[in-house]
Image (spheres, rainbow, N blue to C red):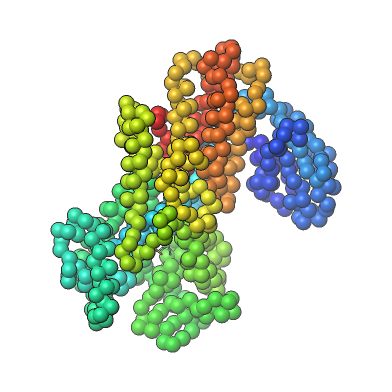
Length: 563
Ligand code: ARG
């Protein structure tokens, strides 16, 4: 039972979807204004009427019922009063009945969403800069699946380009098998950086590297073997991090996968007269749209990042017949995606409008930003390990006899990192701070996990069967606040999918945790005045635990029973 949704569906405003109406409805600050309010100026344009008139008309046509007992038009607002008793029972029952499905829906049934995220580069560091795309994309993947869509997670590997020639050169010149096997990506990065340092005074190395890359492309066995080795080393290492972060993919089709799939795209561009020559290169001129040309083939005939992305878009449409195709990629690539989407439009693909660049901001550490080129890299693995270590230290200090300490430290450390990365609107730049994400009293993952564990602790202490709970004589307002927030979980999940904002869910979880803790400190649970109230509060506690766990699961975070 989600009030906002319920009201929105009952209202029916021409030209405005129920989801949109629901997103405008807010809880009122005080109960004499009713429980929910809808600002009608939002519809002034669509209905071409003054908000005051709209509110009056909607109020008189809205039929009150058992759920919404009163509607009033006040200064261009519609104020709704709900049947708190009925609502309270229904909400808790719904959460308890639906359990891990609470908040899910079937809205997306039959629809497919491709999500391109993480999309790491082979033999390059998996660093803190990849955190956002990885956890944002993974969360969207879980959210869309939860809403009944078929999500397809794609890791569009950067496994193509002269850098692999450079790496082969560097490996042959200064590397050895054993060190690469034991040090993995760190050693490959060292070799790559060394190549750049040496090439400054030996520019002929660049030609040699290009030749090695050509060898890979032409299938030279030795070059290919080295390249595949680098690739499997990278994937094995990143897989460990994906496991920690609960991140999964359905496809690892990277750039090189499109080697033999670009020609049809180039042919179609030619056939539709979209290719022009510019300084020897073949480009799609986008001057008319205020963009630099999209380069399809370099003057030496080589394809580019954009060429492979066009081929990938065709491939995804053909293979998955997506309804939406998302690219979770930093805002630095805004222009690239605008160009790609425009070229698809010029090619006459109606599905160009289903392509969405989910842009996000930068992550840097407190001690200054990071530089990849010079090898001064902040490895994501190290950041996660440090968070886990810090959690371990807290547990050892505060709760040294906790069972399963290591696993809990891992879940909480990882939870802190993911939650921290998803706490703000995705487009904002983030300065990552260990102290901030790990603060058990702050707006953090550990705080939410701690609250969920508190719920479990309360439930574990009682052996009362509360399956047939009833409403206590008096409902405290701190109890009702928890209920109202519980009820808005489904619409929060839908809104987070619609706006592609997992941060709606992090904020939701923080708020629910805060409201529950307020209730916990204001109301006795196990020692409440009568058994009816004890049962009711236990049921409420269980509903909060379920909802927090569902919210955290959508972010890829586990919820410990104890902490
Ligand atoms: N590997 C690229 C990078 O690190 C990101 C790829 C994003 N996906 C895509 N289809 N272009 O910048």
